[in-house]
Image (cartoon, rainbow, N blue to C red; front, side, top):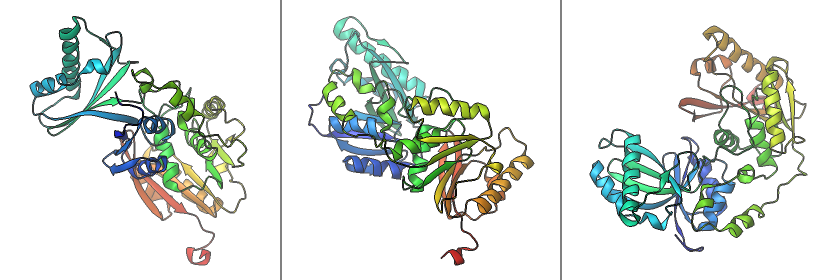
Length: 386
């Protein structure tokens, strides 16, 4: 593999709609030659930047290191191309490996079949060289290999993250339909929160948004809670370099920022408390068990609300519409001076909020297309506020 200071290409994967904030995060880390793509940002950097990207990026799901690119049109060309890579330079017989594949091509109908052909090519190369084969471990491999095929273009990468980076390590329990940590961080960054004014999630569920906000406010890198990264089992892993990256940023434990969460569910708040304690943020976040119609924000002149209300999968249509109308009334009457951001996939219910959004962004919560809406709440009319 590369020497310590060699510059090489990398790709950070994310959710659709978060490419801009991921681009900014990478730029702030010192990444070079950034190119925005679809659900990804390509960039260049050295080994230290690859480690930092895994440790610091809040809106990345994976950091991939491309090692080969080919033009292929069928499974035989794929097999032959994979065999041209010297796999024994990346891992040994004693190591395990796994292959993930993403396919957007008429030439290949099934991503699992592509992964199987790649695995066969790697195993056959080892058998030919050493008369023995390495084994596959899909859960915790020594080396995770990523194959991406777009039309006739195939990119083979090493996955430096291992488990998806949304798995921070602080969340030990969830309630129903938890918000993905990377999406939550992306929502906060997109909102432009200043990390000083009061932050509220009045429907906080298991606490993902308030925890991500507290991590940002107190300068806690998202990799701080992780047990390991994929690159730690690579044969060129530099433990001293990773240790130095852990010590670069000192969390601002004395920052005084009010981060508040509330939920109607006693079970959700109990889970949120456990997750907050696991993240060592017990004294940084205040929680209440209250329905939103009874929750009053503090009397600060300004602040931000970011929340992920129910979308209505398990609620009757007229009930969810009434609930969204209640949300709009509540924001209008009780949150004067606040910027309110709301994520929902129920486009019909959104119409019943009765407030005009000042911004409307499209994000994806899993496979669900959502609107991320900003409402600037003024006392009286906008004209009098100005």
